[in-house]
Image 1 (cartoon, rainbow, N blue to C red):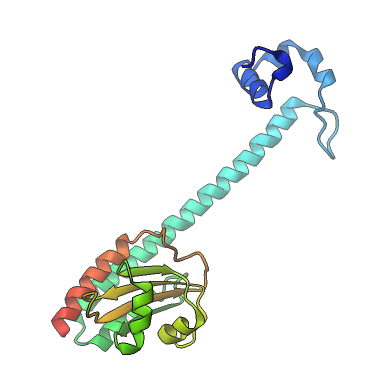
Image 2: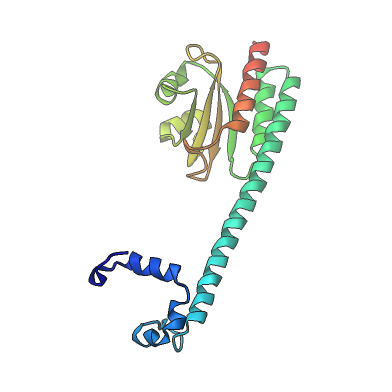
Length: 208
């Protein structure tokens, strides 16, 4: 704390009161000089103010817990859907069967609007060069022309794209689209998808 009382900062006062929680109880006369009135409430009451802050904090914690539970449930569903795909793809006899399984299964996720396995051809060359210049995946947004190319004009807010096969001679693109603008972003984890992509790579090579 500052040695000169005239230079006390708000943080200094806060630190002192935190270290001396009984200070106001021991010096109640100070309350007469403090503006503790809260709009639309009656006389100042530290206990009531503390209760209000605790209720607000409790509400905030409940919202955080609810968000965590929703996220856990979503992850559980995604894990199940990806596991179902992992098992089913080994029974597929051709590329189209693979594409159908992926589209039917993974589109069941509430935040995935479209899932497509798209065979690579020269019409995708520019997109691949632009979006996969460093990594074999791209998460984020596409322009309208790219959306038309991959999703037949479906207006998606965010996408996740995974290049399958060698970078110099790809075989397909696994593409996800979402109506949620922040669902797919570069910071997303890729654990579940990476496992599926690895299995797809193997299965596509076997079917080639």
